[in-house]
Structures are given as C-alpha cells and as structure tokens.
Length: 389
Image (cartoon, rainbow, N blue to C red; front, side, top):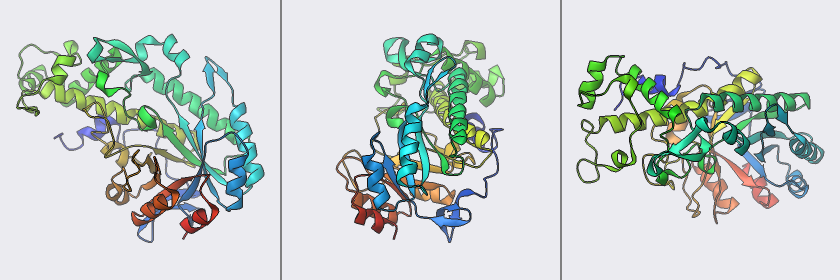
C-alpha cells in the first residue's frame, strides 16, 4: 500500500496539474437527479452517441434519419506529418459531411496521441525499451517521455484551434483521447516487459527520491540493501521482474525495489493520460470535456505491465470528465470499467459494444448500469431511438 496522497502526487492526480480549469457552464459532466449526466446549457442530453468510423457519406446519412444529436468521430488523426507539418484535410471533409447530414449534431472527437513513426525515428531516446530483450527499442514512446507529451500535446492543441477556426467550438463537446494498446492507455506488448528506457529510469529515480524523502538511509532500509543510492537506481531486469518470493507471490519487503518500479511505471501511465486531458482543458479554457479509456477490469493481458494498476489518480482528477471503455472482445454482456467508483466521483461512463455484442444488448447494459453508450452507425433506427428512452 502507498502512503495516503503519495500516489496522487506521484501520478499527477487532483491538484497536481496547473492546467486544471473550472468546468464551463456550456457543457458539464456531473450528477443530475442523483446520477451522472451530460448537461448542455443546463439541460441533460441523452447519453447515447453514434460512432462514425467511415470516411464515406453512408454513415452520416443513416444517423441523420435516426435524429441522433451526438456523434463520436472515431479514428481522427492528429494530422502531424513532420516537424511543423500538419494536414487536416481529412478531418475537414468528415466534419463537412456531418454538418450537411445533421446540422444540429454535437461531436466528441476520438483521437490517438501516440507518437508517429517519423517522430520515433527522430527521437530514439524517447522510445520505450523491452526488459525481456535486454533493452531493445519498442515501437512506441515511453509513458515517461516529456518530449512526447509536450510535442504531441502541442499537436493536439493545434488541431483543437483549427476546429475552432472552422466554426466547431460550440458543437465539439470534447475529446476522447487514445494511446497504447487498443487505445486504452495500456503498454503494448506487455509480454516483452516494457519499459526500461532511460526516460523511465529517470522517472523511477525521481519517484524514489520523493517516496524516500531524498534520504539514502531510508531507501537502503526499505530495499534491504546497503548498496543502492538514488543516482544509481536502474529499472529491474527481466530476471528480477520474473522472480517471486513465495510461489507466485512477492514479499513486499524482499521485492520492494521491483514493486516500487511498477508503482512508478503506473504513475507515468496516469500522468501521461492526464497531461493530454490537461491540454484539452487548457486550450478550450475549460469549455470542453476530456475523456480516456481507462480502468479496464477484465479482458487485459496478464502481468504487472498490463492493465491499470493504479487508476485512482485518473479517476480523481478534475481534468477527466468521462471514461469510455470497449466491451469484452467475446461479447460478454458486462462492463469493463468500475461503474460504481466512477459514479461516486461523478464521472460519466460510456460503453462501446465489441465482438458479437448487439447494439440492443449494449444499450440495455448501459441503461442497467446508469452509463452512456456509443453505438455503431449500422444500428437500426428503432434501436437508436429506443436507447434514448
């Protein structure tokens, strides 16, 4: 267990990000009549949206017939092609089609903020590295990379300003931010044991300095080792990560160094997600919602590198208004998020059907758990209209 407050300080929780702003009165995600709700100009709107994933006009035409007022624009690119190079032509075309099909529609933009290939090639020290392959570089940025956070965050802010210039500042309600495996802020390829990069090692050392109050004696006592000092701290090797103390269990005293590392890794995972939510709040001056896919309880890979071991900083932060998680790939009619915890924090939860799950089942599941739902544009109009009830 961590000391009270330490996880939030280390992971960028409530009060840790200067970009936080009071929520705008235009759009709010808060409790209404005892349940989480989305309020637009003070009026609750149905928590039913339609996913638009195609670049053709077919989907926009379909949802226009169903009188849906909330779209999630999926698969949007940052349009970040190189240093100082941006292309928003695809986004502009999609927004134009939506406006033509449903002039009163509101959108939530789903956008991935992963580092593009050209950026990773230009910044190899910012990439994650795999412990299982003796530091081999990974094809994704380290959660601990400040350069990735800042430069991709700037690209996100630039896209937001471009949408404002196109006249969408009032009709874009927020951004659903994706990164990592399935867009769920999980480390890709966890079996290869990321991340032992130099950036993660730097943040592991910073984490230990704060946790052990910059006192080498406290560090040595906690780790049961007279050798470590803060400057010499490194990420655990693959052997150390695989080692247990009692069967499959780790002793929290004997394995304190490894456990501290995984706590620091989870802290960087949370801090990265919160950084981009902070960009949404800062650029919109608090007028737009920020959301992530986070806190997936099931259907994850196995191992401490997978999942979200410490989701509380994200759930607690004022920067995060909603969580939108996909369902089970098998179609099992269960949510992959802690609905009760999110409700206590007045966060919206959106469910998205996956696998063979039908839109009708997804809508019923969301309604049962007082959650919202994003349905595919292929959903029959009667089902869409029924979901509003």
